[in-house]
Image (cartoon, rainbow, N blue to C red; front, side, top):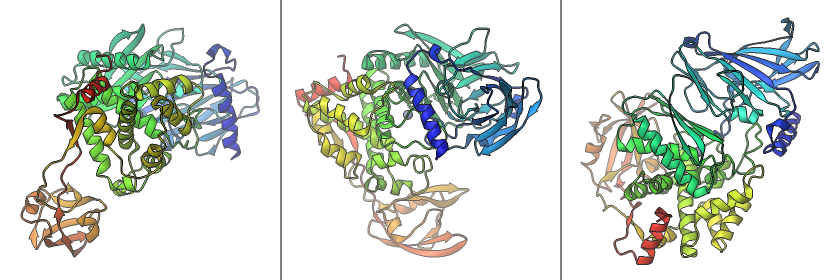
Length: 601
Ligand SMILES: [Zn+2]
């Protein structure tokens, strides 16, 4: 509790100074040197020169999580061989004081050198990777700092492995040669990943600001020139929407791999770790979606943020009920931007929005958990999904997209198209960006002011509650409709399965399905239906032999024991959430739709 308060006080000082020139930070810098003498062993060698203020003892810490990814990841588990020496090179006593903290007896030395190794072989946007080809260095899992978090510069000097020609990062350069960077404070250091190796870099300028797309791991399937052109279109659309670019330079760090994990936003950069096979239009559009999403975050969340998301407590969870705004609305605009920028067709946009609505509306957890609560519990639920997540919670990305869409439609309908969610985001940015942050009520206040009406019932039902959503505004505002498929007449169990070396194994059982009612469990192996063997690739054709309402006996194996379960099939539900343009939309609806999709038209 004491440690927590101390961090908070130091962090408050940080916020107040944020936005002021770095020159006002007078504290001595911490200087890190990163070396990679044996990259094939996946280690970063760190030497940190740490000013002590001549205190007899200093306390050091490493962050346990990284902003934007709400899970305690215990980064210090990859730290090894921590030693400390004084100015004369003599070893100093250093003890582990907490899971992520170390205490150094300085012997009165003005500066101590702390050396340690970080094992780096987890290729995601929030962790570290080192091999002979390249390195991805994220701040939180790499840099040990003074635990009091007194504002001070953090300098980074990199000795790349011989085969690596380049380092790319959003960090400001430091004079004195290549691979030298200086963060004005710890927050900036943590917020500025570094990539080393031989990335292919494409640059362009928008509004006088330099942008770079740095790609590692590209193949012929990835057309870098086209990708940079399309990234520029995204930037230009975001500039049109927000009115100004909020950074001096921007780096999109694009790591293409066979094990994609996603993207992570920073103030003037983003890391993508995505599928390298983006040769099909659909896969490429998905890649562009990440670009659009992470770049939109440069405004929404990195500068216009829920009040709880800064200054960060790096050693504890930070709870917010507003991730549906920070993530969901960002994802809504990620889709909308691609269409507005001419990168996806109207049908592709309606298709992706339909998929989001369908995912929400077919997840039983939507009736159990509100999106505000799901946001609060991101740390223990969203980032720790299990086989029952679909029944017990709601995805604040998915529901956030749908809420953004409905809010947009509500405001446009209420104002006859004069105002929209675009106005809400701009107004919220003007009022709450920078050090302030917004509370849920403040964001709602902005939306109501723009809409010119109370949205209380919307917040109560759709954000804080679990009521079914009302799509009337959406279809009425834009002259679109949901087109349901015809009843299939097919027998349906309501399970998802996986093929486990030819064995048919249940991977998910949704609440409200025949399988759920009959007591079929995740990890049950289905051996036979009515005493006839069924294998992993035969379930669909076998189900075609039965009719809704028929009862069958399943032979299953559960924890090595064979047993029988009787189950009555239901009818496979029709797909009812596919959006399409209404053929008899009114002129007013068509105008409204055009203004939504092409605000400049
Ligand atoms: Zn995001």
